[in-house]
Amino acid sequence: MPLTLWLSLAAICAMGAMSPGPSLALVLRHTLGGGRVPGITAAIFHAFGVGFYALLTVLGLGAVMVRFPELFQLITWFGAAYLAWLGIKALRAGRGGALTPGAVATTPRQAAKEAVLVALGNPKLIIFFVALLSQFVTPEMSLLAKAIIVATAIIIDGGWYVLVAVGLSHSRVLPWLQRHAHWINRMTGVLLIALALRVAAGTIL
Image (cartoon, rainbow, N blue to C red; front, side, top):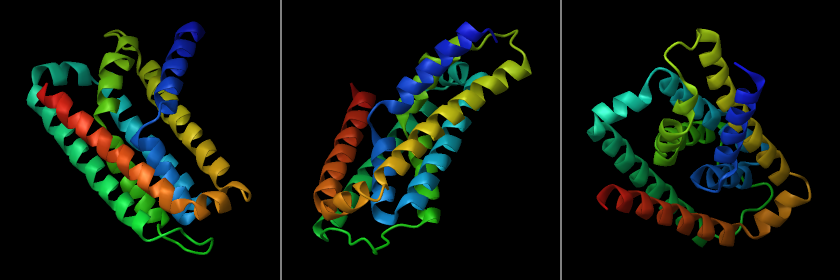
């Protein structure tokens, strides 16, 4: 793969990873609830979910979605329902008050499970890979080039959210976040539910 083409691919992956959405809310919630380890775990496993879609893309996800639109709609509804459920959980956590520095409201195992589900159930990721990443895939592309596409998507997504988790868990940042956890949980909950409604509405309109 030419360097200029890879740089374009990396820029697109970076813009996709850095755009606000349920992925950022997920890493924030697990970092706030359990500290650096659950936050980094969520970041890494979210990247694995992204890598799964990148792999499907190089194997022909776009053609599958065109041929089976019902599958795309099913995944979209699942993603909307799961985002709404996470939003309700965040709102309920908000009523419980702020987290204390020693409290553990989440674990690495929970973070890993939710991160994979959020990645796989996020319709934005499906659209992103079908509409943008598939443009880098050609029929004559080598196996190595396809592996580079998948690895680039995983490393950039995971690297960005690991940086977010490390930054949020800094000794000066995390205590402030924990003192305001009830407001952050409420804002996160509202954001997730709004995203769920937008996703669901998009499948109807």
